[in-house]
Image (cartoon, rainbow, N blue to C red; front, top):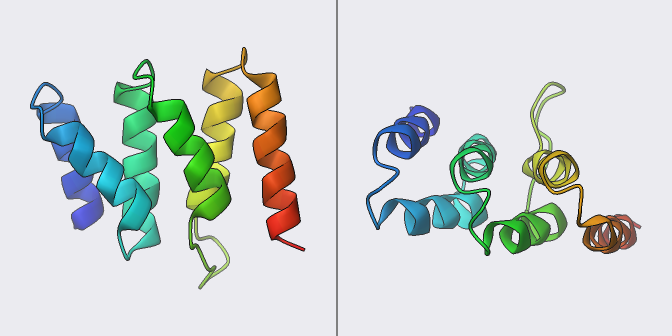
Length: 107
């Protein structure tokens, strides 16, 4: 239900000044990985041109505390990295550095 609330908030309240900070907070620190994933997707969908979004995605791709609980569970780190590759193709060096950090972290 909280995941759906994030969707509705992002879609219906995009112009509210409190929506972006709320979504950033959910993307970085919600206890539920599905809520974090949804917030990441909504940030990429609605705020991809915000100068802080790319850096936030980098941080999530490297530092999200995701732990797989079941096979088909979506990983917020993976979602963030996929968004970076697809929406920011002019930032290959940043993406390479983020990918290296992820690989080093997983060793």
